Image (cartoon, rainbow, N blue to C red):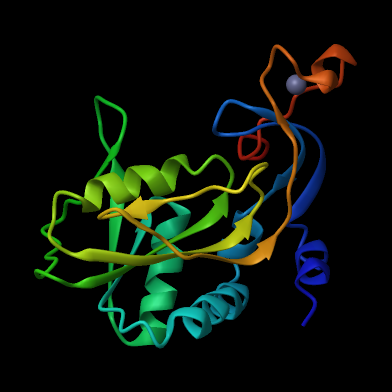
Length: 194
Ligand SMILES: [Zn+2]
């Protein structure tokens, strides 16, 4: 299966001028909900993550809201383990594990997410997990579009970051964005339809 072809066929990859959730601008956008709305596609991508981490003795899969919840659920289902999620805080930045989720001491945790761009959601999820005594053993994402290689650590250990599809795409601050300078209309993904 050619993953790039799969992304094109399902209108995941879009070209234009986009405002990313990080506040940066880019000429390319991955519409992750074209994957997340399709259980067969989620099953396929989650299967690649499961294959990569299946020997790692994972006990819990954790993802950040919103897309990460769906992915954590499917990877956990395939591994036959528990799924939890890290949600945003109401009044301040960062994420928190709520809902009475229990993480036993020493539990081995796999963190998953949809699209890796700046690494912010993953970093917030790792921070939320640091208040428990589980151990994060790796990170799995559907798409890694980070401009530079991102590194994450937990308990002073560098984490294995696995991506089903990886591509490096330049992002711009609004001030330096050449697409803004060229007067191309900025699209805000996810706010288009009703
Ligand atoms: Zn721009």
